Image 1 (spheres, rainbow, N blue to C red):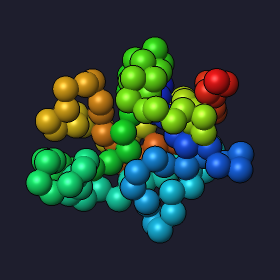
Image 2 (image 1 turned 90 degrees about the vertical axis):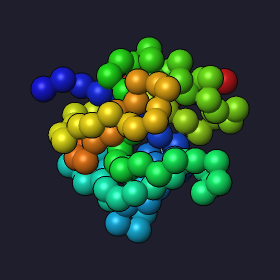
Image 3 (image 1 turned 135 degrees about the vertical axis):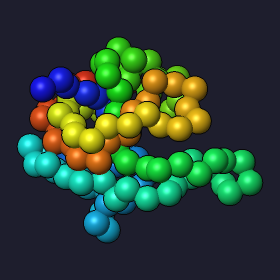
Image 4 (image 1 turned 120 degrees about the horizontal axis):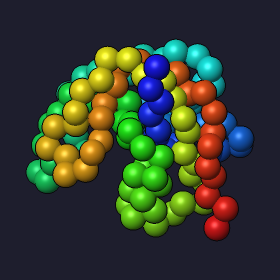
Length: 116
């Protein structure tokens, strides 16, 4: 099975989703399959964003994930990149980047932490 990558927030040594909650929490478990709350979502306000079918955001390459993270976020200190397995994949609509969305994800390990 191919590996994918995503970035996460780190809080008190635990991984958290940056944006949307799933099952009432942003905390992400290690080595456990989790299912995204797949529904219509927006990145930003209703006036400036387009609705799309949301899921877990992932990238196919580590370097691409790191490049996007470093470019997109000013506050990197609590961030990390994780390696994961995924199921049920689709392309993020209206994205200018190579971002994929997935319904099921298993985070195997943290492979990079911001040390700045």
